[in-house]
Image (cartoon, rainbow, N blue to C red):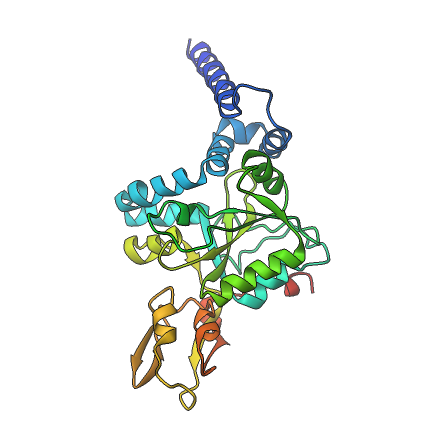
Length: 308
């Protein structure tokens, strides 16, 4: 009896999933990138609904992030916040590290990044240099009433993500050359926005994007500072002040995404709060800010060192 009930339930689930895919694809045969997406997920990903979850995230990113930030995070317990961050999280990148990823010219083998990403899941990197890159609108900025500009700053890295974004968001996404990707990173760095590499265990359990985040719009930063969700891991560096060069202009304090800098005659850095993004160094007119390695902050995510 129970076996029959289980088979009926499984059949209903599969039928529901087929109808969902057809509806989401506007009642036409699935796009090639969706088939590639499902092949990567495999039957296990389909049955445990991780493929559906990943598909929803990729198709309706703005709505997904809005629900996450405004509805889910405020209601999570401390244990729930840690479990969520374990499955969806980012690693802060310095400007040089972000450039190194998009200018890669050699293959980086799949490997466990446990020392780099201090979470139990989503720690793999799969890049075939030079990596394919697409850019599409930032879901975090889109959901704000008066978002920071420009909107099109989220960089998707590698397959099947690049083709999926290009096929499902043809009007708002575009493929980037390496030169264009570097130019985008540089422009965001000059605006005082931080780079972060994002990982999801859903579907492939690997690195899939570089976000260019501003402190006023980013859902990950908001989740950390407002709700205590440990969404972002430190770069492995911490800001350092040259006290003799600092003019106490306050530019670094104003731009710091994590509120780690205060003026007290000169700039002072909270080592515990600083995530080592380097925004302060890029914004300091006196060039008094820099980054120094902090072993207690974890191992940097630097693709130039991964296969050396």
